[in-house]
Length: 182
Image (cartoon, rainbow, N blue to C red):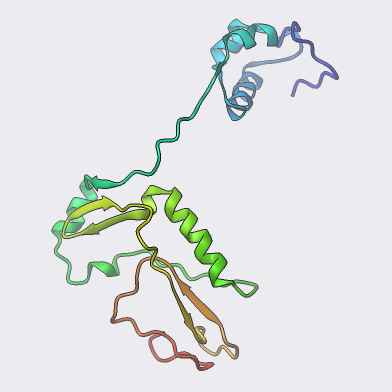
């Protein structure tokens, strides 16, 4: 960072060419290493020896999974108040094309790990209420065999994980061409 071949614990950061920008980089690297340090401390304690005396080791305490009721944000309350006939149409869907075949069991395991680790992925809403489901709630996961792309001449596999498809959605058949509406 300073370009010096060797730095001792008593060498002065600023005498070696350090400046305010480099001090911010020092703080960022210290934080990535689990040390709590501020740019001000770098200015006040200009050697590694002095910084070591004031740096505090940060500990992150795992809280475990969050579950239970959630208060809707104002925009979410507004959305629920609209009384839309098909609120499930207001979702975010993404279709991804894999370059190689996807192993559904491995994908399911990866999605289950994300589902367990990230509380927000378990956020549920119904009748204006919102809650975070427990991590052991079953993960919606369906594999549908069949061609998905218009004009596709090969069999492909569609893996749907979130949210559960409404019963009115028509799924593609196992033929090489998708049915109308797929």
